[in-house]
Amino acid sequence: MIIENSLPVLLSRLDFAWITSMHILWTPMTIGMSWLLFFMELAWLKSGDERWYKLNRFFEKIFIINFGAGVATGVTMEMAFGILYGPFSQAVGPFFGNILGFETITAFMYEAGFIGLMVFGWGKISKGMHLFATLNVGISSSLSAMWILVANSWMQTPNGVVLKDGLFQVSNWWHAILNDNFIWGFPHMWVATVELALFVFASVSAWFVLKNRNADLFIKLLKPTLLALLIVAPLQIYIGDSAGKDVADTQPTSLAAMEGHFHTYLPDGKPNTSWNLIAIPDVEAGKNLFSIQIPHVLSLLETHTWDGVVKGMDQYPVNERPDVWVPFYAFRVMVAIGFALFFVAIWGNWLRMRGRMNASELRKHPWFLRAVVFSGFLPFLAIWGGWWVREIGRQPWVVFGLMRTYEGVSNMSMAQEIVWFVGYIIFELVVWSGAWYFFSRVIQKGVDDIPHSDTLFHDHGEDHDAAQAGGGHVAPTFAHKPMMHSDR
Image (tube, rainbow, N blue to C red; front, side):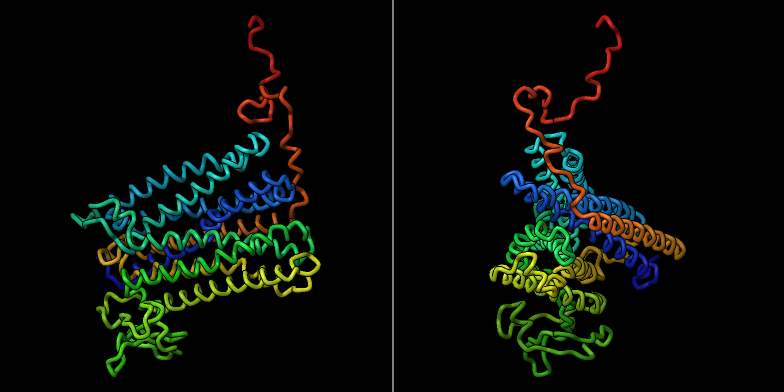
């Protein structure tokens, strides 16, 4: 029998938290970058500007490394479901099995085919077909994210199922897939992938400008990237606010943890409307030992009224309350980064409006360039913070309100728990360090070794239409080999 607050349960949670936290470093950037690569390639084909081709091929190298790391860490996560959470995997099989099957068929296999054309098809297929392949990588990776968010959001708001004979049996697929948390959770995550990719592009570009390496080339990318961020950054803040209001309706204990909101009412009976800027939560005592509060802000954020009632921890049994420390501070880190990134976007576009967005002028503003370089790492922290809020805020449930975490944990010995934990730590760190080694090599080499597109794509004329059947420009290897029999 597994005890709810035992060390094996804690180790299983920490192990899976480590695995998912490392995996989520890679997959969002794959999704966002695939779309940006598509638009850069489209810009090259529309304008004929060779600089867009060079930028595309350079960032594609980063994309490939990132994709490989995402696949490697994704395999360990699939293993961890069965190893660490066997009873959970069995119970949710009727729903998860179908959803992950949909993800495999409609997204992963779809992406695998087109990513081969995207990476290895340069010069072997036509320009238009290569653009089509890149577009489909973007679509398929977004579909993959959609199905994964369907599964995770269902764990937050398990609509459309009944728990019968130890299994979650689907009673309404429409409600299960389009569950309450998914409606805002998926847009919030997808826009986060685009914002992450935009800031990675901007960060790398700013680094090259700061080092005065191909500065004019990377400023060509920095300009539209900062302009796009002026739209994406505030959009993400708006979607995040809407997602927060949804959490208030569907998972109020998680919201109370995010806000360190222990008491629904003040001692005089009035609603507790104060928002905690910072606090020292004490879950056992059911209060904050210290806090800096701003009156009425919590009610304004969650109810859009001056003194609306927001339920606190005191409205729920002690054994149904999540931990507060991680959701409280992870949420604040995420929000602070969101506004900081918006500020960087405003700063960059202000410089652009003043005619400062060129190499010589930008080097007079090194702090802006340093801020953009540093901003490339911030979205990763924001995504981490958001994911931890979702996962820890849902506790002590693995399926909110229906299955507690300890019920879904595999019954393993301490020795087994430790072996798997150490093994996963070593593997993920090897992948992480290897990826960063290759990232640094790619950035160090820069774009100077990327050949002109004419070396791959030629205008062969009408006489060569037969040789280019299917869009390719490479002669078959068997074209000049003798036949096996001389009489044929």
